Image (cartoon, rainbow, N blue to C red):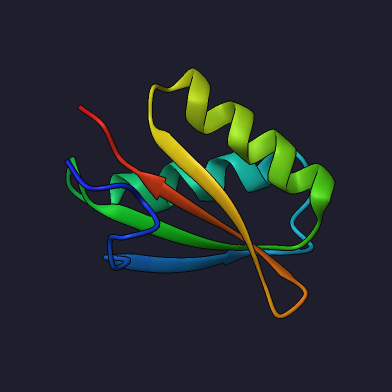
Length: 81
């Protein structure tokens, strides 16, 4: 299994300015669109949303890595079975 940072994203979504709890539903929809061991790249709108989505991914058992790229927060989520 490769780490999320070394994997290319199989799907990209943007979760910005989405009211709670809709950002978690957007995450679930994005994860449903990929297969196990694939990577979902999420462009996140802020630190609070990033923390909430990271916690949701971890609670669901998925690997997650947060990176900062050009002042933008990005989550790389590797879907687990």
